[in-house]
Length: 468
Figure: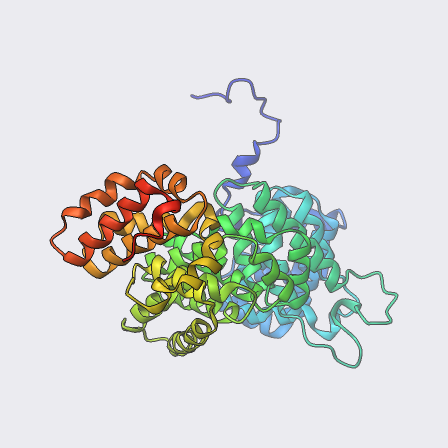
């Protein structure tokens, strides 16, 4: 017969992770000593009667009980959470409530029955959110999220839970609950209590709560947006796809709030969202990302960023796929129109940059316009000479002879107009890469490769003598 684990006494509390791995099913198999609680006056005789009728009964028997006496059961559950601190019992009642709401979310309305108007329906869950083990915290968070989101609208100047504009009630206000939830959710995203469940649970609840403008404000103030960005990456498993979807749903909800949009503009959210769309076949994920693009298109510098990232072509590719969601199709059409309008507004350098980044180089007038090069030569220094690096990639990899010729020509123009052109291009090891094209079968490519190499050897001082 095996004894207790070495180094741990039988009366010591179980490790945190033991309780963290509890499931609702396991907890609901417990037999709670309700009669003992009544004999010690922790619950009343009426409570005991209600619990005997409800406890360990199938949903087919519980449903009519909740239809008939739903608010009474809510009062019983709340009273137990207030008066009994034994962990097993607290877990059990939270599991009962969670199961009740999961079976039928409309039951959240029972918390707002008129007969409970004097009850502090939020306080037990808000308290347990910070004091319980992981199972207790998770259930408290999920229950609070469901019931706070189901609260009725303002009626006769009075909010649920005694939260009136002129109320001096000591009941927990909805703002207190929302602040407590946002604080707890952000703390879980920063330092997860549970290695597997903290982040999915937090994102799931946020994807519901961020529908509220006040929560968006709180979340931005808590510096929560930066906690979402690392979670936006292509997913493969069912669980990770759901987490990705709900994270992108949070971004979409935040895209309606200007302060959140301002913060998003300082992050790498756009490249990450683009990668998600490229790597996702799940319609609901693509839909929520495209809806986010549509919202962000008209705000700040997002349009130019979308164009830089090749979104116009991506939208065309997405439109060619067989989507069934009408919202997605409408959003793609609106995005296409909006991107075209923004392309027209872009400066000549923005247009040039877009050409290069997409690899769609042709002999448009700007390439041979001296004023374009004089006015924009310093712009080539952006992002550690990103444009030049892309031109070199085109020279190395493109099979399009026009693109190759234009890339060589543009490189030679940079050598002519930038004061440190030779040094910069030499650092990119361009000489050997361009020289290979001097033997290209296409005459235009050979000619422009030769001019580029000559300018690389001669420098800007003599470059003006060489004409394309």
